Length: 90
Image 1 (tube, rainbow, N blue to C red):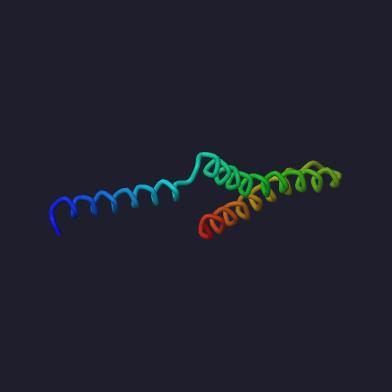
Image 2: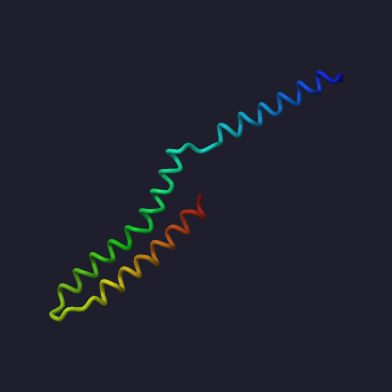
């Protein structure tokens, strides 16, 4: 094999690698959707805990923020676990 054929094969392999890397690269939209999903997985349980805790606190005769705060923390815990499992899966 002469030098020109060897150089041609190297260029073809490099072009194939570049094409493969370009096709596997994630788009900006895909990255945005991924980050948005992570945000929702973290925030939604916290918001649900806040609303449920506020409703439980409103049902009691004396004012107490303990249910609201407890359920926000619990929602943050569940949200963090959800984010961890989502990232681990992808």
